[in-house]
Length: 439
Image 1 (cartoon, rainbow, N blue to C red):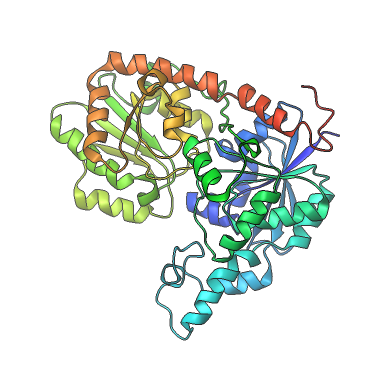
Image 2 (spheres, helix red, strand yellow):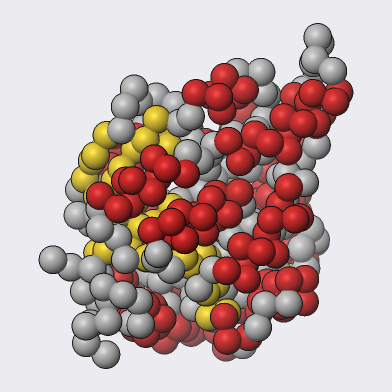
C-alpha cells in the first residue's frame, strides 16, 4: 500500500471555494484539475506518495467517501458541525474582515455577541475527533494543510498530536487573522508543526520575523505545474478553431472574478488606455473566469464603456480548451494586488506567453530575473504602468515571442512536477510510513 498524506484545502465549507468559481462538488470530484491542490497530488503521486483530501460540507447529511477521477486521490467529505452551521445562518460573510463586514446590517444581536461569535466561529468549523477518525481510517502518515494562517491549521496540529503524525502547511495567500484567538494560538501551533512550505521570499521573511520560526523549519518549494500538459499548441490552428483572425493581437487573463484581490479594476483602466492609444489596431482582451464579483464586474465594464473585451463567464474545467485560448494569445496580463503563489501565470508561461504582471506576492519569485524569466513586472495598482507593458508587447510581436521562449524555459526549470515532486519527496522522506521511499 502506498504511503498517504492527508490534504486539507482552504474553506470552512468546501462550497466556500467551489461556489466562488461556479462549480459543483460533483464536478470537483470528476473534472477539476490544476491549481495548488491537484498540482501537489500529481507531483507526489509521481514520487510514490498518494494523497487523500479531507473537507467539510453543508450539503451532505453524513460522511461521504469519493474518488477524484482524474488523479485517483480519495476525497472524504464530512458534514460540517451543527453549531457552526446554525451560526452561519446569521452571517453575511464568514470571512469578513470586521464585525460589520461579517454580519452586514444586523438587528436584534448585541455587538458583544457578534464580536464573540466572530472570534469563536472559525474554531467551531473543524470537529477534531471526526477529522482524526477519518484521517486514521485512511491510514495517513502526515497532514498537509493549505494555509497555516487559518484556524483549520491550528485544528490540524491538534489532530496531528492525537494521531502522532507530523503536520505541515503551505502558504497560498492567507496572511491575516479571522479571529483574535489566532494571535494567541498561532505562535504555539507554528512551533509545534513539523514544517512550512513557502514559495515566496517576502512571506518567508514575514514568518521568520513575526513568529521567530527558525530557517530550518521553512522549505522554499514552489507550486508545481505539469509542463507536459501545459504547453502551446499550433497558434494558427487555435485561432481558426476560436474564430480569431491572424492579424488580431490578443491579451488574455484567466482566474476567479474577485475585483479587489485580483486587481481587475486596474486591468479595466489599463485596457481602456491601451485601446485609446491604438484606435486603429485590432486588439482584444480575453477574460476567462467567474466568481463572487461577476455581476459587479460586468456592471463596471458596461459603465466604463471598456471596449474590445471578450469575457467567457465561467470557470473552464476543460484543460485542452484553456490551453487553446492561451495558445491563441500574444501576451498574458496579471494585475493582482494579492496572491499566495499563483498558478495561472505559470500556465500561461508554460504555453509560451510573455506576461505583464503586477508585483504581487509570488510574482517576483516567478519572474526572478524579470525579462530574462519571461515577463515585465509593474507596480501593484498602477494602471498606467500596466498599460505601458501591455502596449509594448502588443506592438512588438518579436519581443513578445522572445520573452515567451524565456517564460517557457523558466517554468520547465523551476516548476515542473519532476522538480517540485523531488523537493516534496525529500521533505517527507523522514516521516513514518514514508521512510522506505527511494531517494
